[in-house]
Length: 434
Ligand SMILES: *[C@@H]1O[C@H](CO)[C@@H](O)[C@H](O)[C@H]1NC(C)=O
Ligand SMILES: *[C@@H]1O[C@H](CO)[C@@H](O)[C@H](O)[C@H]1NC(C)=O
Ligand SMILES: *[C@@H]1O[C@H](CO)[C@@H](O)[C@H](O)[C@H]1NC(C)=O
Ligand SMILES: *[C@@H]1O[C@H](CO)[C@@H](O)[C@H](O)[C@H]1NC(C)=O
Ligand SMILES: *[C@@H]1O[C@H](CO)[C@@H](O)[C@H](O)[C@H]1NC(C)=O
Ligand SMILES: *[C@@H]1O[C@H](CO)[C@@H](O)[C@H](O)[C@H]1NC(C)=O
Ligand SMILES: *[C@@H]1O[C@H](CO)[C@@H](O)[C@H](O)[C@H]1NC(C)=O
Image 1 (cartoon, protein in one colour):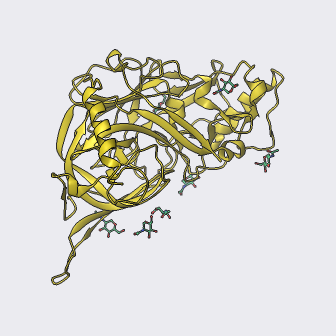
Image 2 (cartoon, rainbow, N blue to C red):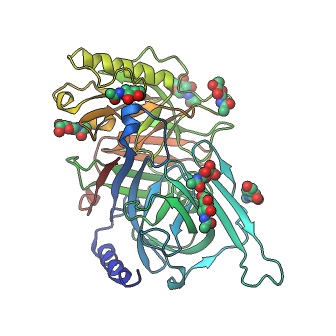
Image 3 (cartoon, helix red, strand yellow):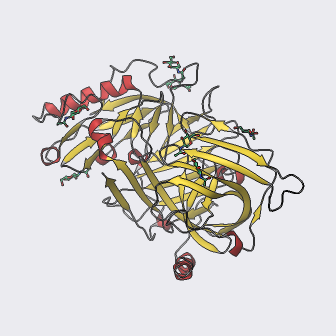
């Protein structure tokens, strides 16, 4: 591995030096190596299974740590910034602490860390202390993180110098992972950058007031515009439609970005069959709607899903096309050869706020799976609560304004990336396995 690494590193470093890295809104933008990939079992769509492990999408960008150029998955629903630190764990590039020159483990755990357990992901921190005479023992702040859909990772906290966009951040707290139980190939990513509201996320450590991103499908005409940006300070509203980000209620996961979805429209008509309060948070903290960048599909409360499925099915059937397997109550698939000639019913999500309707393109909610079928990528939630997945967000700039009180504002717009990031070098992969 050491033979191949220097060449790969210098190539990446060169790209970092020559690629245009633009600052937007007084902050930073990363456009280097920004790419989106997804892995899913197509059975999940044809049979409508719940969210299994290994149904995952990775929105990846380049960064540097110590002296190494690496790339990592941007994840708005997990906390930790972490890198694979143990050679030979997986075939992806490994961060080598000994080569860094600025790497330092932290012990004991910082007082800010909190254990967090929820139905979508978990993180635990615990001090490892050493007894006198316990030779070779080093005190560490150990963590174990479960990333929903992706898998688990564990290791110890450390600090190092991070290069993010054109800014160098020294003393960034991150996880040096010596155990990663995830798929081998995350499209070259060596770890994750958590953008959740957790105390060690990038958002919390850098005290960001805003971040935004633009993901796109491989066949999108805007291809080449993907970016991740973040910034500090007070700003005017971003351009687009605005809806509040809701502070977590008791028993909800306080790290997630919740939105107030109020309804669904098909061909401009509100689906009145969805019972009032379907998307509301229940007293025990279940329910609610949050946004994810690492789950490719969207999961809706069953009461809403059923109404949506029935409406889409009847509108397609009225054009003379029947679903492949109408008896499969948890999915909606059609033969691609017929479906591609159809007028696809237009779906829109309605959020709280003036003019906060998100009109979707067919590729945001239908996908061609192997076997000649085109399936709805919206599925019923099995965990209580709805998740807006990454496929739904492709082709749209998503901007999160973060307020200290746990709330904030989400702005979405159909407009592609800001002009200054249009020169991005870009790689995109969509792999539908099994
Ligand atoms: C987290 O939970 C573990 C037990 O799973 C406990 O040992 C540890 O002290 C807790 N850490 C914090 C920071 O509360
Ligand atoms: C990952 O962690 C979760 C939560 O702690 C646990 O339920 C699951 O079994 C773990 N998975 C693996 C593969 O270790
Ligand atoms: C890695 O973590 C998994 C749980 O996610 C555990 O089952 C396994 O034993 C760990 N491996 C090592 C070498 O610690
Ligand atoms: C929470 O309450 C809802 C009804 O309000 C119930 O359907 C659900 O099973 C409860 N969840 C848990 C985890 O207790
Ligand atoms: C139809 O769906 C059911 C239930 O998910 C499944 O068991 C069956 O294999 C499917 N049939 C076909 C022809 O795909
Ligand atoms: C969600 O939006 C509806 C409609 O605008 C509003 O009545 C409700 O109070 C909002 N819920 C929360 C928790 O803000
Ligand atoms: C699916 O494939 C058909 C036929 O090749 C194509 O016309 C259509 O655009 C594809 N749909 C999506 C959502 O990719």
